[in-house]
Amino acid sequence: MNLKKSNMELTGKIIIVQKPISGKSTKTGNPWIKQEYVLEIPGLFPRHFAFSVFGEDRIKQFNIQNGESLTVQFDIDAREHNGKWYNDFQAYTVKRTQVSLQPISDAEQAGVDLPFLPITPNKDHTLIPDDGSILPF
Image: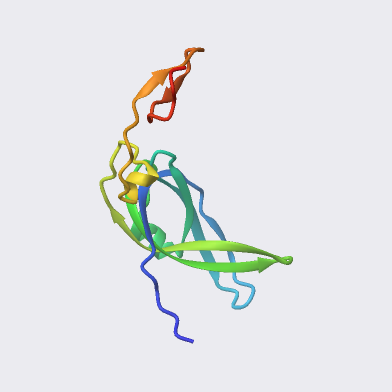
């Protein structure tokens, strides 16, 4: 089987920096440390992406701070615990970026042109789109 790193990356703003978690490997007895973060991806409905950085060297090197705009490149793996599977997203590269402060709709991100529909109030004064299919009688 040929496993390659795929170019999975997301860009957004760090909204949560968790405290580091550490322990000892049950297999080797070596100490380990990881830190978890949440990245908010802008859009009409912002998305959230939780990921971790494994290893003291990488945690110090990336130096991720709350409020920063980043592009995170990551690997995905899944682990089983008591018959249930959990996804794990581990960052291997972090780049500082500028993120647009204006929300971008999912359709705009996909490059889809949204139709313009004028809005007309109806009898009970609620607004409805006027696409020509609504008759005034």
